[in-house]
Image (tube, rainbow, N blue to C red; front, top):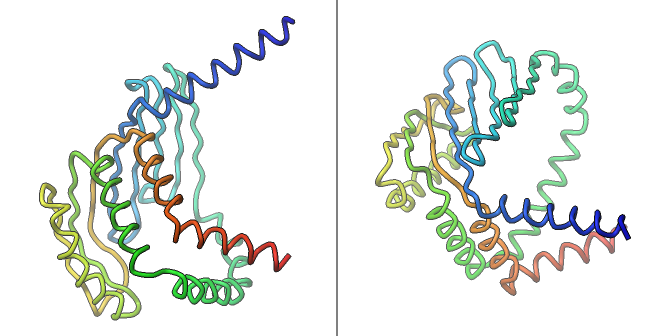
Length: 223
């Protein structure tokens, strides 16, 4: 009997914690820059700052991670330079991963139609209105290895421009250089229940549901 009461209180505690995570907003700060190396910084605050998660990568390519809970701090730091050996091992399976990626691209091109793209656009738009940063600054230039994709981005920027009218964003396309150079900073709040609700609506949309169901069928057939 005592174990049953303990289990009930434990489940009640988990339920309350789950509701708090869904309903209490998370505050976030994300910033970064790139000149010679990437510098990235991110911070998430919850329960009015009583719980904080902070991390990033500095100019010396050192990655750090820090959690603060009610004044208690847990830190961890490591260098990305020690990961060169793992990167060499990952290159061995690069060709196979590219072949699988191409097959997935062809499959999704066959399945995705205009109706799904329209619903996905509404999903992104609805999520954006709820999770959009209060402040946003993004200055820099960008370019892809294939100039075709750079041109596509140039054509998409005016379409999404109305969503960023309240922000200071200046992105210059570069067709002679690959990569991103510049800096950015985002600050805002997120209430998790809203994007989760929008994601459920998207997944329950019949054409999207058919795609998910088809993928599961193919995987089970292969195995």
